[in-house]
Image (cartoon, rainbow, N blue to C red; front, side, top):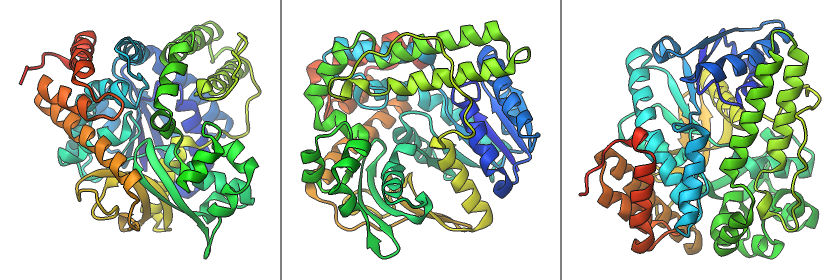
Length: 457
């Protein structure tokens, strides 16, 4: 089996490799190909990955390339995690949105819209090449905004494409930890859109453990920390953390504006420090120090994630990157992708939340809508599970955001300013024409190198 990671020069590649090493015996991967357009980062991250594979006694071949043709040729499965515009593009997205009075989060609202403008055309080309070179391969998209991008890929006819995101399975992991059981023993019922989803049930056998877990204050404090317990209980469901930006829209905007750095600026700063330190250390000369530096970076990055959403959060003290090398890392999106690959290849059934066409699974959503929903995956493919009727509060929000996503995909396909404005006007966190029009103009101008010329109609 050949597995390809598009975006292999990204800072999560070593974590992906660590997860694959843990899954390798059940998968039989013979080659992992890391592909990236940034040769400098590919060599640095690839060097860390080589060392991790070497320490595991080389259970598979690791290859690096900047050529998408060689990366995709002969691939059985492809994971995409790219960032057109790099970290600086995210910084621009967030600052432009905030300057126009709306939230600039990377996947939500105007920030997610701008990311989609750059991501969709690139991923459509990768999908076209993959279909030409390896037509039987599956593409698992983790590129943000994952659901919207997957909608564009499916609308373009790429049927062997699935959107993946670890946030959709947070409830499953949380309830399993609370109950002291394996996550795979929990069957969660998740519905919504990517970064806009709810978990209604978490069964172990015939028992739904979620109500008892949510009645436990410690569970809510640990696993729903950005929400007031009263809100979680009001909803009666486990909330995806990104719902914070909808349920606390004014508070979230105020909190983000109060930060010294946006999340994009923080990531740019951390990544620049990491790259500079790794270039100085040189992994081939001092692999131990290089890995300790990387895991110190990971520790620091994770510590500042959504810190503004936590009451009384403190600034993280500046420090050198250094941390012990863990025996294993959190599986994240790699675990989602690899669990699907194993189920498809072995036929051993799993249940997991994925971004796939609705096909009637969620009542009230269109058949072709890409939704985030619990699925059964087995040797015959990926099957979205039928949901009970959705409450109006959740369904209404889903429909509003899906309208935005539908219009955004059309806008990118037709390169239409009018449709782009319509898309942002439909988004619950933008709505106003007086905000949407200048936002579209500013974002298209800022990213002209990546999005090209757009027509007015």
